[in-house]
Length: 168
Image 1: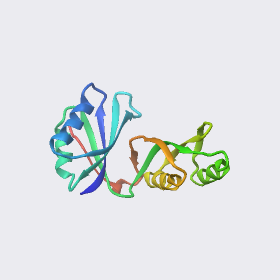
Image 2: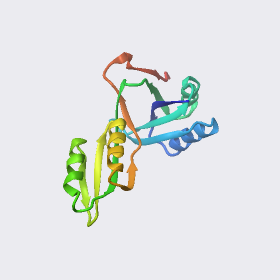
Image 3: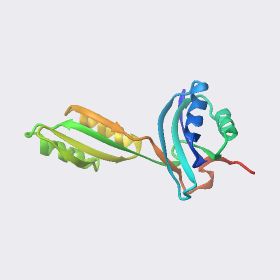
């Protein structure tokens, strides 16, 4: 199964996210990433999901049947601006600290907390960049990490994504 990046613009109403997540669960789809936040219109929110599944056409149709769904977009690979944020704490023996900081600098990671034997970095960027940073830091020893859900906006090219807007 392949991963699909879907954004759903919804009315800002209680229970909307629960209905969306429930719909995916009932159809045995796994949501790998989920982020929800306000849009430029305070009465609307944008739900961004990375979902496993063979084909999303039926899912898109089902999403439109849910109350309060305004717009659904399945972003095709490479045709959306995608970002995540990650915090990762690594072992940082004082003798290797400058080496670790220099390595993190390559990825534009920011040290946000320095302890006696650890450094916590914040990394923001494309999901592949975060994965690369994580792989690089594994050699030092990862203590803990947390990643946000992916957020995305279609690139400024009208043919970049399949988008269907509900007509009233």
